[in-house]
Amino acid sequence: MAERQKMKVKVCLVGEGAVGKTCLIRRFIHDQFDDRYISTLGAKVSKKEVVVASPRGDAEIAIDMTIWDIMGEKGFRELLKEAYFHGAQGILAVCDITRKDTLHELNDWIAAVNRVTGNIPVQFLANKADLRDQAKVTESDVRELADSHKSPFLFTSAKTGDNVEVGFVKLAEMIASRSA
Image (cartoon, helix red, strand yellow):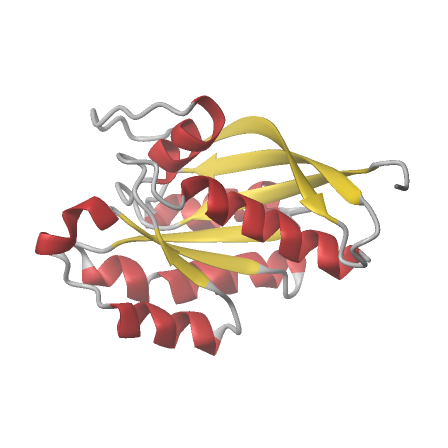
């Protein structure tokens, strides 16, 4: 087995306010959930290492993820975008399945990132899957948007932890395969 490669990557979570970006990060990093809503002011940066198979399948890559969580308010998207998105290698695009507008807004978020970074891998996360009975967003809605960006999607729940780790790891794999 070859020596484990190392990679440092910057990923950004984008999406409207209160879709669960901070909760997804907390679940991924600390395996915790807190449903008290506290708006993120500016950007918060977290780190976690994930290990993925090399795209060639001959080794493992330890990916040191720097995860940027940005406030979801529109006015700040323009204000922060240059500094926030600069150097990003992947996007987790998060919507709230109980609020359909949060899905449609992701096009603008992704476009804002791509203006700074060029096209980078996107993993769509349809969050709050534990609230399926209140869902306004269907699987076909999410699939249509994800397909338009040639990207995968997952239904996640920061509350239950469902698919949270998978979402971050899949994005890490997409980034690793681009740099191979």
